[in-house]
Amino acid sequence: FYIGAAILILCVIYTTVKVKEMPPAEYAEYHGITEEEKKEKINMVKLLVKAPKAFWTVGLVQFFCWFAFMFMWTYTNGSVAANVFDAPTVETVVNGASKIVLDTKSIQYQNAADWVGVLFAVQAIGSVLWAVCIPMFKNRKLIYSLSLVLGGIGFISTYFVHNQYVLFISFLLIGCAWAAMLALPFTILTNALSGGHMGTYLGLFNGTICIPQIVAATLGGSILALFTPKGMLPPEINMLVMAGVMLIIGAVCVYLIKETKGEQAKA
Image (tube, rainbow, N blue to C red):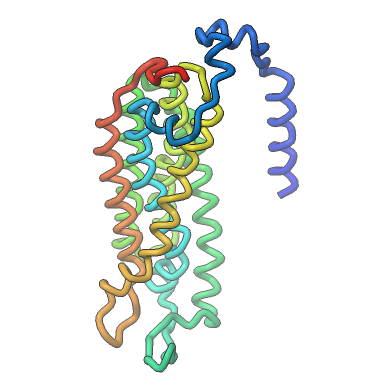
């Protein structure tokens, strides 16, 4: 944590010192923003109507990506505990109904939870390594789509893996999707913006990160219940498979994106 904090502080200082912001007048001239346009007030609804197509198409890809990762953060512990560490189950009563759940107090479950922390670290390493490779591809949509497919394969492969060390491969692949998700959507969007209200558009675009997670959290329990036979342990590993399917759908949707330069009408 100390090392991570030091890296973060150094990166912030380096960015602050090295990145020079355009003076407002120069920025307006560069983007062709007139004085009248700068003074004009416009609400968010009108901005969304004038948003470039890339805003919506990249947002669609974002929906499937962040939906998938919400499932990962929610169901990886249970999946690894049951599928790899053979954690025991217990019977519990919830709202008068008997349910079979994993024994979270068992040593197997505790070991699984510890191992998930290691797996998430492996995912982070995979994302850093893949982030170095992404700029080598000139076709941005190709590398975006490929990254999501690799992540999807990583998620789906967890269903078949019963060795804790083989899971390293799965999470390295998931890291590829994570790297692309953090870099490419904002690159594509900012290229499509002409300069006017860019900050507002980027703020609105953050909704494509939050909303999918809210939807996934709301529907997750109901979806898991559909996979669960009566009187059986809920198969949380199925949710990771679904996360993989969602990433692959997102990879297909990447090809709906039309990359443009300064597409949206200035307001």
